[in-house]
Length: 263
Image (spheres, rainbow, N blue to C red):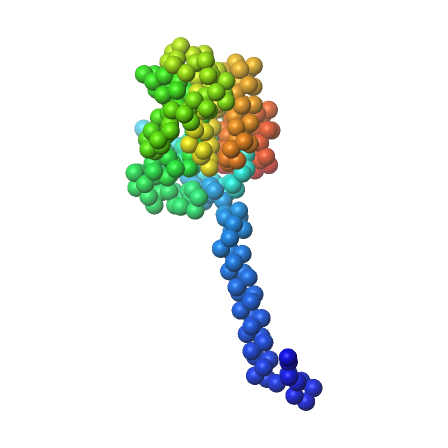
């Protein structure tokens, strides 16, 4: 019950009511920022003023300059550019596989270049998957062993079972014991895709995944990669020179002269 004095709120009571209202607003705001609302708004990948220069004899070459990029969880982002435009260099920097001349990269809120190499490797292992143009399969391991490898390195007990399930999903259940040299290019890339997704990464980085494949096989591989990405709810950053592949992403960014131009 509110007591009025002379038709107005008594000053002390007014102060108490204002304090209660203020605390309620602050508590509501605090709860908002401590829940998934903040997580949803924090970029999973953030590059700030990223630059990369290399020295060739007496000449310093600028590969990337002033790259600023935010990628939110669940997005599929393509980075498009001509050959030699720095696309693969940018992907390597975002993954912490290379170091920038200047600038910062945050993965899931962590400044990756403030970490040592072991810490960066641990972070990559816990949240990243990779698909390379050249497949990067280990030649002495079979298809199933290549897919099992990330799980075994992470200490997963059921690595063989999980690898079998994913290889079946990509249509290679009849090629489990084949070595890379016994597989076609398309089959090798399917193994690579299975390996990339086997740890359920939050972020998948794909560098020209169809670059070594014919048109028909490349189209099948892209279909498979996007299907798995939707099924597993991962964020995708895809480097390509193919505008048709790029258009399938939710956002396209063009790399021109070492700078990003967002569509």
